[in-house]
Image (cartoon, rainbow, N blue to C red):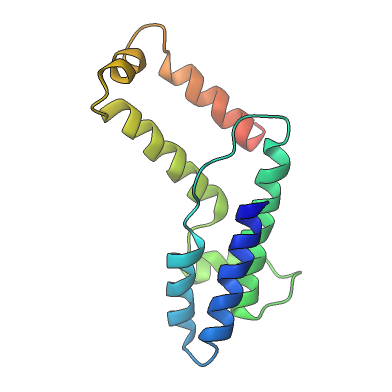
Length: 134
């Protein structure tokens, strides 16, 4: 919930302070300020609920920035303005986390990740299925 409010706050700040700026400047500011997600929620019963709320907030913030109505397609607007969609951003975050685990300097984590007990392909597929309901 805190990230959702923060996302709306950042978008409103951009809209208010940069109302006279060009659309390209607003899109660049959205990329800088609104795509920084810190700390993924832990896997719990409320994960899907929080994920959906954050997805809606991300789409709404971009629509507010473009002064588009709520019923217009956010994914089309993301593609037109070369902005990463929420799902693509989450996939990038998961992948970068996975790479940091694989290439990290921590010997214990590195040994565990590269061991036979830790089957990467099954865990990644299972996690992806949980995240995206496949």
